[in-house]
Image: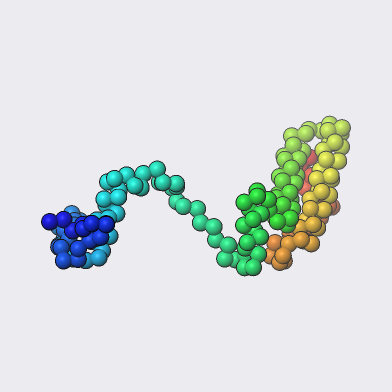
Length: 165
């Protein structure tokens, strides 16, 4: 006699047989065994095939730290836009990478005064742009935890001169 009755309901009087995790047969009219059987039957029927994120972790959107701004941040993220202070921080990181590339090029520039002057001008421009972006970030960031310290132009030029060798 099958435990399944009409309309997808189960008869609780019927003894459910199932195998546990170690392969032993378990007998008993438990709710858990019925649920497990439904899941197994659905798996055998292919109900779980081709689900999204199969085989990879499901991405979790945790906006708990955003508080009352969570909805706004979610709208911006879905639109592919970030808050202005995050965009400013991205720009700062790009400018700092450009500064590091110029420092690496200075080490390979050799003794040519023309090449050194060109690199020095480009380096000064990048440092000035980075400081402007840092000022913008510090003005727009919601808390001081996101703030950055401005670059010291004299110290940065000293780094460049040291890289020239």
